[in-house]
Length: 64
Image 1 (cartoon, helix red, strand yellow):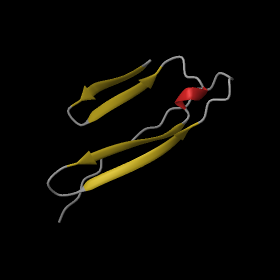
Image 2: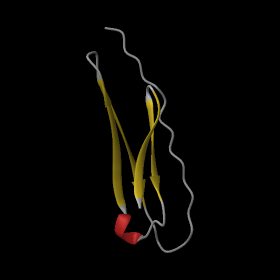
Image 3: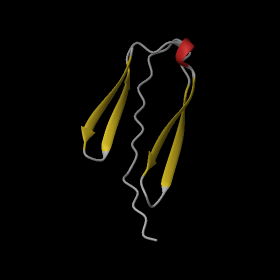
Image 4: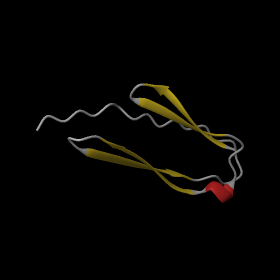
C-alpha cells in the first residue's frame, strides 16, 4: 500500500507499507512554484529482506 500524506504547508510524506519487489524502481518528488522547479529521485530496491529507508527533502527557496 502506498500513501501520500500532506504533513505541512510545504511538506508531504510518501509511505510504502509491505514493500515487495514489484515496487522496485525510481520515485521522483517534484516541487514547483512561480520561481523554480526542483526534482529529486530516489531508487527503491526490495529483495525480500526487511529494509527501512527514509529520504528527506529539504525546502528549496530560490531568489531570482
